Every structure is written in structure tokens, then in C-alpha cells.
Amino acid sequence: MSSDVYFAGLRARNPGQSTVAKVRMLFDRAGFGDCIVPGAPVAIKIHFGEEGNDSFISPVFARQVVERICDYGGRPFLTDSNTLYLGSRSDAVNHVTTALEHGFGYATVRAPVIIADGLAGNNFREIGIGKNHFSRVLISGDIADVPSLVVMSHFKGHEPAGFGGAIKNLAMGCAPPKGKQEQHSARPQTLEGRCVGCGECALVCPPSAIRLEDRRSVIDRDRCIGCFECMTLCPEQAIDIDWETDIPPFIERMVEYAYGAAKGKKAGYFNFLMRITPDCDCVGWSDAPVVPDIGILASRDPVAIDAASFDLVNRQPGLPDSFLKSNLREGEDKFRGMRRNTDGYRQIRYAEEIGLGSASYRLVGID
Image (tube, rainbow, N blue to C red; front, side, top):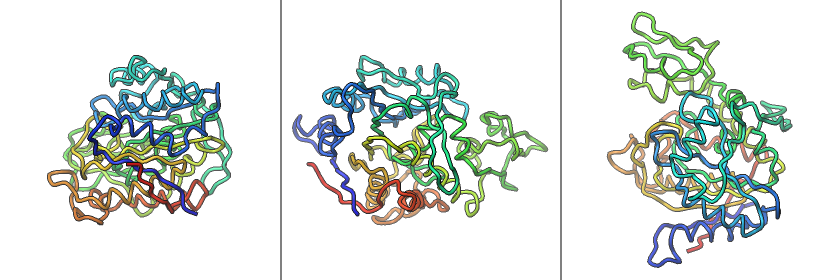
């Protein structure tokens, strides 16, 4: 059965067509008001962006969602979970500081920022799911404890997952570091002949699992937690993973975590198809977009909204002088054009298989 996915383009010729107005219209047309329990807290799951990144969702857009939730009697707060890797969001103090520095203060968003897994990532709940990889998953406590959830995702590329959208935002974003580590089953390895011994990978490795020997990085796979920071930051692209054996179970584990995060929730999902960058907002930079800006989607179904987003991106022409290496023509897979081994659509296939949502959708324009 198809799920409705509501779409708003970015053209505007009057205030009623502004982007902020469209966020509010999408909230109403997609039926997000039905998710709100009057008087109860509502978690708005959003990525605040790593220090140095500037492609995260604007806090001005988040305020529109806050205000609509308040109109329906809910008590909203903005939230995310601490990271597995080292960076500006690895504990709640730094995480909140980063959020404030990126504009997510009360004066702008009109709601508090609460890091859902606590100061050091130890506030979480076990949620039973009974799936293929996990009988239970670990979900950040302040997300697990609320009846309603609005997920705001910046749709973009992602190295091992292919793309990041609603499913990944649910899975990684709603899990504490221990839960993130359970999902990251893959372990990277150094490629012979490429490593120049610069040591960048060792500097960013959270468990210090990388050392230099004879001007070559050596990864201790027993200590490695599979966060992929070394892969992302290696200037020589000298670190890789076994795409055939490691990535399919990684994606399936991630999708099962998304199932656990959404279980029992009244939830709505926004995907922002703007500044579609090659990398997650977890990196400390924002590369040039790989396709033109498209618009904003809203749906009650996280699988359908990601399927629609995936298709809309691939229908675009690729932008020259971007990270996109091939598949620049309309209709070609832009995610494989950036990283030829990725299979982002596996997220959607497996999510439908385990009952998270439907890959079939009906795109409904609101313009």
C-alpha cells in the first residue's frame, strides 16, 4: 500500500510561498497535528551540525515546527544523541554548546535543547524488537520516554550507508554511543600502497585503535569501534572497508535500530532536500552540493519519505565541480556516482521487509 509523501518546492513570489510558510503547511497537510498528545512532551529530532559544518537544517525552520506543536497543545524540545566519534558533540556539554553556536538558542527556536542520552551517553532504554540482528535495541532515554516524535532530516550522501535521511536519523540519531557502536559492525582496513603515514587517522580515532608502523597506519580491529572517522578524514583515501561482506549487515543493523526508535511512537518526518552534500553533517565541513536544491518533503512514513527523496535526487542533473564523479545525467544514481560501492536503496528495501514502512509512495504537491 502506498504512503502519502507531501512535497513543497522552493519557488516563491509572495510571503505565503516562503520556505517557512511551506514548513508549516507541510506540517498540517501531512497530519502531524494528529501525532501531538496535548500536554505531553514532543521530541524534535534534529542534527545540530558538527563544529565547522554549515549545511545542517536552519534553526528558523525548526522554530516553525516548534510553533505548530505548541498550537496543537504539545510541549516541544529539540534533541539529538551524543556521538560515537570524537568531536564537538561527544558529550552533552559540548553538544549543547555546539547547538547554541549554530543558532539553536531559545530566542531563535523557542524551545529548549535537551541531549537525549544524558551527559555521557548513559541515559538509554532497552526496546524489544525481535528482528534478525537484534532482539532489543538501545534508544536514548529522553526520546524513548516521549509519546510523540517529529524527525527533521537533512537529506544528503553518506559514505557507508549511501545516503542519510529519515531512517538514518532515527537509527543513529536516536541511539546513545553504545547503540551506535552496535550498529557499526564494519571494520576499516588500510589499503596497501596508498597510505603515506600522515597520521591523520590516528589523531581522530576515539579508542586509539590506529598506530603508525614504518610510515603506514595499522588498525587494531579488536579495538576498532567502526565509527568510520578514519575513512572520512583520510586525505589519501587509503582506508576502506569490505563493501560486500561488511556493509549489508551494517545497513540492516541500522534499519533495525530505526524500527526500535519509531516503535510505539506517533511520528512525523521532514526531509530537507536542500544543499545536498556528499557527507553527513557529522563532518567538520560542508562540501559543495552535488545536485540543485529540490524542496522539502513531509510524511508519516519514514520509508516512503526516504524512497521519494532518493528518487527526486536521482532525477536531477549532477552539478559540475562537485564531489560527484560520475552519473551526472538525470535519472542516474547520484549516490553511486559519488561512491561506486554504495547501495543506499538497501535501507529502503530492508526497512519495508521488517515493517518499518512502505517503499511505495504517492507524491502530493502542496504548491
